[in-house]
Length: 410
Image 1 (cartoon, rainbow, N blue to C red):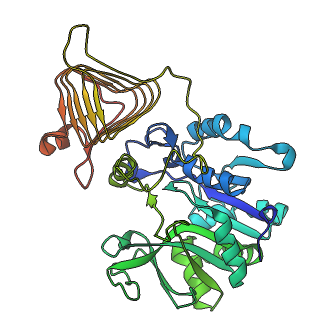
Image 2 (image 1 turned 45 degrees about the horizontal axis):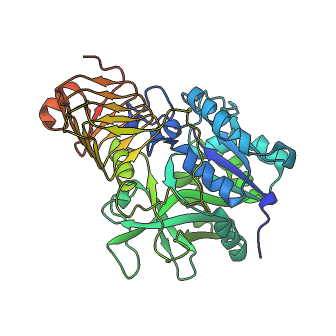
Image 3 (image 1 turned 30 degrees about the horizontal axis):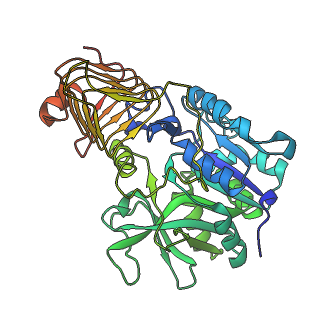
């Protein structure tokens, strides 16, 4: 049985404050942070929706949403056809619960329950706006319908040592979820491979009637955190409801699909570096699955010698260059450059992410460094070389990546 796309309404939770991504989220919500040079994180989820034919989309926004609303207006509203009842629409908190902000992931939908009652879809696709992956949601919806499920959870296998950051599931041979623990200290291993855990991607398909009942029940529970992972999902499983795990696989190979939750500075840097690797988990150049965005019309990027008669040429290896970049007599390797980045003579940039409008002066050395938009790094600076010195002046992540914030001035 195939689920009709017209019977699916998509709700994207896109209001995260992103405290663990600070200072990248100082002025923008987490889904609006730039990634892979020219994209916003939200572009991956919205591209999945558009490419899957899920074109009735609500974005549940909250903090610092001006930048994201502008991006959605420029990049996404033009490709959704209103005459065919397609839309992508931002919705702020509705204050149904008497709170100023969403109290949890489940509360974000409860506050917008009138949207579900107005549309009356057969199914609700619930997504997060801060994940990087490419997924055709139609397969998951068909799986949900075929199983007669009330909730289906997209799942990936993750090293057990890292699984404590996610919701971890135990399933039976038919894929039915029998256990679900949010961020367990000792994650459950997969049958046959205890080194891996089966983790939730935060991608859900709900049968609408069940979702509405659960949101109302949860909203009345004063002890609840009003969260899908902590409250809604465990309650459904405990009551014996039909909850299934959908394995996220690459269609051509059957391997576990690439999925990255951009929750920390380290995961942000790791994802960017994944995309410049010789065999990235996502093909940004796949014409059958384009990742859409909006980029201001910069001039082409340019790689050149430092000056006339200077023997040093620009050298770029395993990197992503956005429009408007200039590299003059510098070396760039395993790095991601956003639009309008300028790198001067003698600079060396390795395993870095340079965001919009960054200028790197002559002779600068950058290693495993994220530079926020608009920063000018003066001649001769060395960042990412001495962690102790960096911690005294900049933000340094848990795994030692240095972040130079936009407000930093020399």
